[in-house]
Image (tube, rainbow, N blue to C red; front, side, top):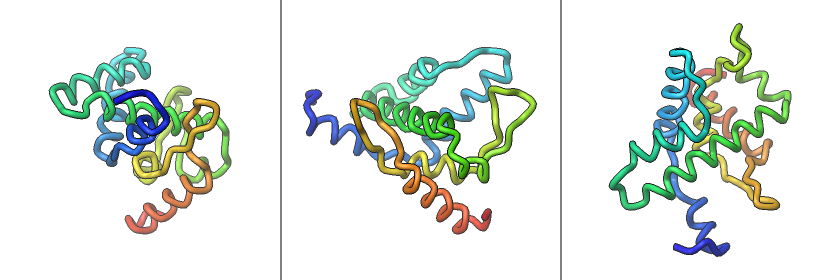
Length: 138
């Protein structure tokens, strides 16, 4: 698969589910709690090991990392709506996050502009709200 626009659209359309996002989140949290300093490269290596020998391993790893990047950009944007779904902790590098945020990370369409991927905030928070209501966690 080439890196032309059509090929990249197929890669970005790779389906991801909550369990795949949580795999990264929980393992990165564990490493952090062990006193390590995991980064997105750590997550990529973790995913590469998990998906080795799979037909679409590279695409799957790439898309999961891109989705996590989009979540981090949304958190860094200081969108006030995120405060409804997260709680700061004593550790400045960690926050408690409602599962609906991670579900939205898996489901929200990724947008691209100037070679940057992002979640459109209104779409993202619509999914968060819908998922919270469906799980009785609103």
